[in-house]
Length: 540
Image (cartoon, rainbow, N blue to C red; front, side):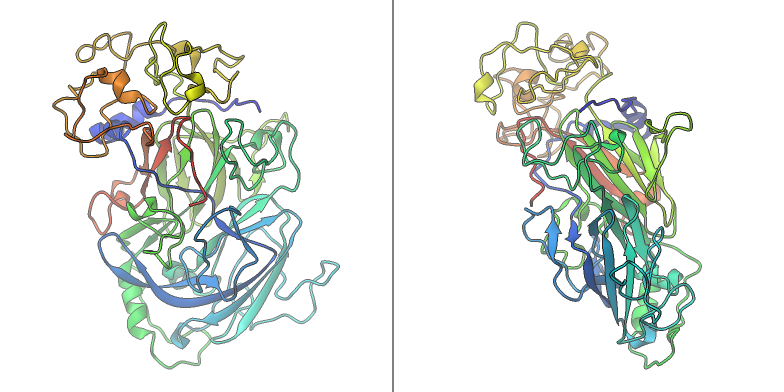
């Protein structure tokens, strides 16, 4: 597979934008956490809409509404994921993973408080029938549910059925079509991933393993039916915000008797002052805990992507709330493939994509986008692996290479791709053997971007690895076999650990990286660029 994504390095400018914090986070040693694009599979889904509570990092428990599974789904993705569950209420709602051409049926039962009135689901971009489709794909004459403003609705205690053909690939959203200012705010939203049925020419078919021998967790070979939309890993991020004042008002009125279709609540949804900013229903640092973590029974999805250098990472991004969120991915720009299932193609050559290269993937409410993130170390002007001229492989995690000369033979694009199993697979060969500094500490050598402080006096906490290099032997390469790295008594960058780079991904609206005005929090997570030695386990 050809990797041709533009690798403009946005990290230098981004580091300046967030000063020393982001710069040092890029050299953190982070404990293993997993991420994926998890969801439920099948073509027929039985949903409920009901109330429950979600948690926030400040210790609050917030009354909310959400979609969930009324009966068990037919399966989960990734297929090997452990601990997967689909509760009867979750935020965001269950991610539906279907294939192009599938006849999809979603039956919704309204288990919200009677005071909430009717509820519903909109599926933008699809031709929806409010009944089960006939075998020929036509819509029955008699609809289900009761009339509503935008679609048929489920009355309190009642049900409505929606059916559609998953006609367009890519990432889509769904959300309540009833009193949207209240019900979407309360948590009634979710995502649909429509997978291509074929493998586009030039894309690598699904297999048990990736070229580097590690597990292939992809849902499909490509995001769309197009050769330029191949990918190696995928993650889904739904951005939303929450005003607890609205939720408190809804909770106070939830027990009121009511028989009105529009409900009997008098909740003020304006002025709007959100205090919580969430990715996949969680705020930082909760979003970096595993998927289906037991401490978040109604917030099953996390937001903590991993990758190896050179991998094409598909980002599925949805604006699920009321505000726009200027989300910035440190480390590189994101090349947009399409929006709402529509590929952005060149006007003169339909074989080429023409999506913009974005510094921030600004999430517009109700809009979904797909993009590719790519990181290789190209353009840093120093060897991120810490190799030295004439050196040999010393990575204990690669016993077959121990003692052999380190090589970097560039391919046509300048990367070392001849051996996918090598410790430095996808190294940018132009920077191979370039030192970061001429000495262990002191002046910058060979055009390196930073001067490192003395690792013997710098203390950045238990996650700090004390090394600017990638890989389990990075500390030795940085300070030598007898050097010490803080904090005292710890073994940084163990060969059995991760020893990767952590790039902070966060909203560029600074208030949105707080939790109830406490920093850090909110819309923030880490992209973990892991060395080849680290097995990325997305099966939890």
